[in-house]
Image (tube, rainbow, N blue to C red; front, side, top):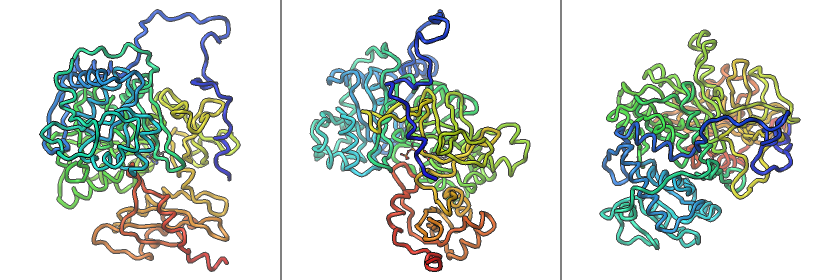
Length: 579
Ligand code: ADP
């Protein structure tokens, strides 16, 4: 099978409009009658305004980068965001200017976020885990004018500032007392000084809801990074989607800890969703190790949290080795990569914490599907429920998805037939910033996610691979995700990654790469014996390799590109036999 044919079946370019959508004045039978309801633009200032009026005393707690835990309220965040707006406007910011951040999840980052967006600036969260050259490339492509950054990232900013000519103001997210004396960055000011004494009465909003609001670049594992430009409307609608009970479903009695960073697809929308519903927020700052996260979960009585699987693995290891419990935590969202069964069962069975497995991508703001259970599945019993929870879930209202084959035909929703996963919706990208990648929608307005998936009769979508990671053996696809998820069930295995290596007879065969838990031992045969009987015979890896550390990319996912490079000369034992 050839990948990407569906992607190439694109519509003639109609800027800003997916051709399947109705256009004004084109309705059969004349012009439509307008409803007589208020035209209240969906802009994100309304979210924080709502929080100030109705949940002004609810807390936003930050473990600051400087160290201490600081307590603010939504009312304080609102006032200080206004001061950020005033400071930016005095500093010459124009509507549409891109304001970059290299920052952890903190109250100050949130103030910069709303302070920028609410006066028509575009908040550009840059992922600090990228290489400095990539960061400079992204800042230049975006044409950012200001950079707000945490002290952690001073060395990066010192290394790149003179390579980024559009940056004219650098704001260090700290106060005078913590300003380094010898920072080699021009036009540098402490955040607290930048906003001190500024007006809290700046007018917010009052522009079109389609105005650009946020910018986030994809990691660029294939080609240059591409910018996803969110609008006010898409962000508000995405937050409302998240508030659905079977989506994130948080409310006023929740205390939410987004471990997922704001620079990773808007902390999955939580920075909008929590103030929208009045949930308390706990911002973890720079510390995301198991012990630090546990400490906040416990001391702040967090009820809801969200992170990628690797973060949860370190938390679970910390809990297990210190014999700790999670009495307050009710639910966790796990996404970004597939949830291994071991994590799911540990949370639900050992700690009574419900797991919501979610799938999404930067281009989708990012929510695409969530694994809340349906009564039909629950009725099948615990083991079946777990099997369904390991799938990537069902789309919330606002996302439409379908699976097509290489010729663009819909494949049956039988839970078996895999194909290209296509999506559309009001928080899905229409195009990339500055036209990168050209027209990215097909003739029906669907975006090709680059994932290979199937959908079952109950509507649960299951990712079997990323199109570029799929292992093609004898004309069939082997799911690297399935092999990995089963392999991490072995008690000695910390991380598992399956990649395809060339094979003269089968095209490709799987190599399984293993990082063992600290102090644990296992041989190639132990791992293969463990897999035997748990996966189809022809999916069995041809070889197992051990590494000290499986490399992770900038959003905490296994970096398969690097693994393929490292193991490109690895000779599978079965190759010789086939030659
Ligand atoms: P990046 O490649 O920059 O990390 P995203 O964070 O937008 O980009 O990642 C989106 C991709 O992550 C999806 O297309 C999918 O391949 C993968 N992904 C996200 N959530 C899951 C999940 N729950 N299970 C499997 N894959 C996932």
